[in-house]
Image 1: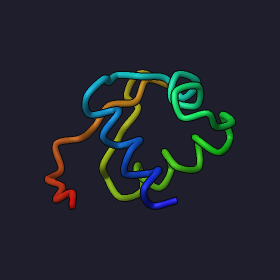
Image 2 (image 1 turned 45 degrees about the vertical axis):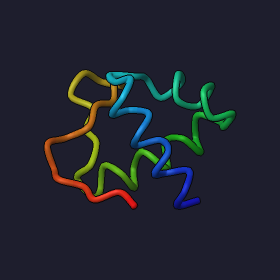
Image 3 (image 1 turned 90 degrees about the horizontal axis):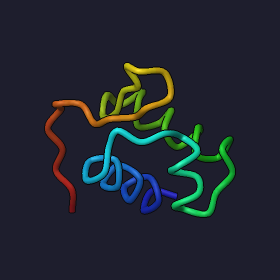
Length: 65
């Protein structure tokens, strides 16, 4: 699960802004599962959805290993 969330973050960073449905299709997940992953990223301040459903990364510094 953690690897998937990291992959979602990197996908948004490289291709954003993207919708929840686009992400779900890209990763082969249901919209609900993708929403849970996005909620984790949003809670940690890594992504935001300023335009209702279009996700972008924030300016928060992240070390990805």
